[in-house]
Amino acid sequence: MEVTTSNESTIVKQNSNSLIFQQVKPNDSRAYLVTKRILDIALSVLGIIFLSPLFIIVAILIKLEDRNGPVIFKQVRVGKDGKEFTMYKFRSMVANAEELKPKLMSQNEVTGPVFKIKNDPRVTKVGRFIRKTSIDELPQLFNVLKGEMTLVGPRPPLPEEVAQYTSYEWQRLSVRPGLTCYWQVYGRNSLPFEEWVRLDLKYIQERNLIVDIKLILRTVFVLFGSKNAY
Image (tube, rainbow, N blue to C red; front, side, top):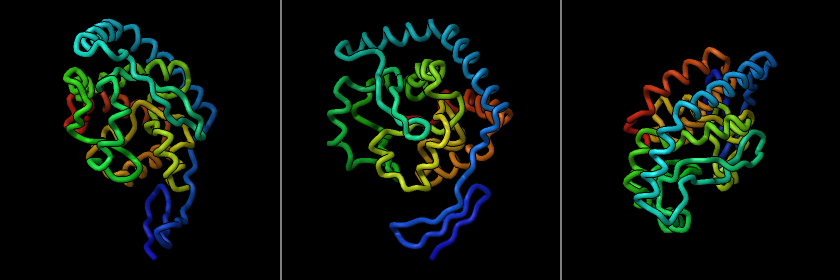
């Protein structure tokens, strides 16, 4: 039996198929949630307005390189309490990227129920740039405005990833998913899935307005040109 202890939770590994852990309790104070929502609406509206020229330029570049696919890539993700929603991104891959994914599964470079390849052959030239600078994620400001996401929170997983979650990992879904969280500023794709989950649960328990503002500011400096963004 292996015991791992941290401030966020205690996990006792009995065998490969079962886990006993102390459940993480989110900070769900009404004052915090109301203030967080006001901040989400205000910053997402400002972001959409001020970034609209960039949105237009990126849309034109995507279409110039690959006219076959849409500018916006829509994908079903899993949000709070397992509720599915449609997440928006600038399309950074070829139009038939989802059809090609099964052939690339053996090249997965990350641990856990997540699929990522650093030099994914499906990514276009424009796509590599907008991924490197995280511009591809900016349309999610509309998800934030709609209330499906928040500016700061665990990244929303795919349904097939959630299907492989343990009860411990499912706790990531106890709060609204976000654009950024500890994972984005502490290494992104260089971190194993287990550490990704630990950081998400750390945020869920510690979250407050000050933490959110700090993570938003740190994300601005880390994501644009991060070597771990791909």
